[in-house]
Length: 107
Image 1 (cartoon, rainbow, N blue to C red):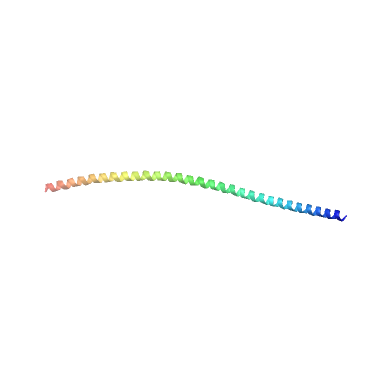
Image 2: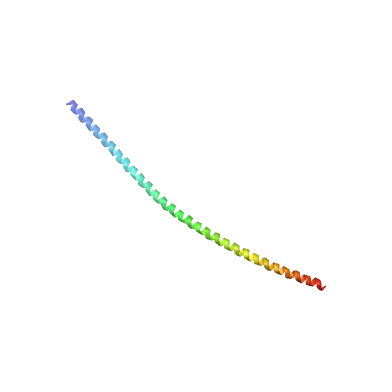
């Protein structure tokens, strides 16, 4: 009888220990699942933000190219304007030199 009681007690203790450990694993599994879901959600949110930032960066790069092109065109126009002004001033300078020579020759 003592053997049976001892065996039954050992069996009950073993069943309690197994159920206790399996309960902890389920708790840990649930906690790990919650953490994994949280991390997954955060990763998705960050990916969306990253995609938006990359889109904005690409938009800025395109605007930069357009602005550089416009700046180049403006520089060319300014250079053409200055060249034309210089040509006109040189022509006017030549006319004035000729007028000055004519005035010197009259005297």
